[in-house]
Image (cartoon, rainbow, N blue to C red):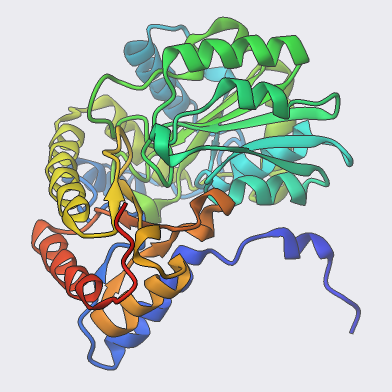
Length: 394
């Protein structure tokens, strides 16, 4: 048999899913596992969205639709952005996709040529450097440092740009750290992108999960918006991970290529799911506010418990639902500590090194589980930590 294309080898094996499967295997043998590894809200999809789905199916919305997306949904997305961001968005600039992974792939494929460079921030969701390399370009990391709360250093970003740089990827609120780009950061990014004629791909899927001021969006900065792919979706905000629904807001030059890629890869996005998503956007947002309030309470308890453990420290995330804890003081590689926690204590967390070189020495905890489970998981972790002989306390 001939060799498989090398491009497939550029794609990650999804560490969170792999850890989840290991945890499930332990559970099948009778183990009790607390799940902190998967970034999936543990709440049910709100009732009014489920009812809208049933109504769409019963109404016959079960056929092909426009590859760009159902017009009614694109109008609802544009209206929602206009309300939240105070900017006018043409529904014709929006392309609806089955989740956000296609947007990452399409964004890299339409902006990068062989030999180009694409910038990502490290630590990063593994798909960012992967899609850059998949498109034939070189992935260039800009480090985010724990001692600054993983805030972007715009000077380091400037130094990373070369004549070959063509794409800059952003993620705010950030997975895995929960950091948020400031207005000053985005203005600096706008200046850099315009000066060097860069495309920008901005993942804003956690935009509604924040604990201080609402995070700013790339779409609010006119010169940045005209060269940016802004992506968001329904998985995190409306607990619709399994529904697979995302979208991109695009500058005019990228709309047709995105629609062509959609038509040639998935034909179109599930029609009745799109009709249900209209209800998610048009109806009350109280379900989102209530969920975020619970995430805030969980965050505060989890971060406090982590910071009480000798050899562990954790900054307080401003958005998303991840605590990224520095465990380097425990004297074990993060992969080994994650293994011990899972196999010996029934605590499934994700090794920070899965997110890049700057994630080494950290563990990511998704607080997408109940408060009782958080307390149980932290009790178990404390017992493991107290048994380690190599704790290094600064």
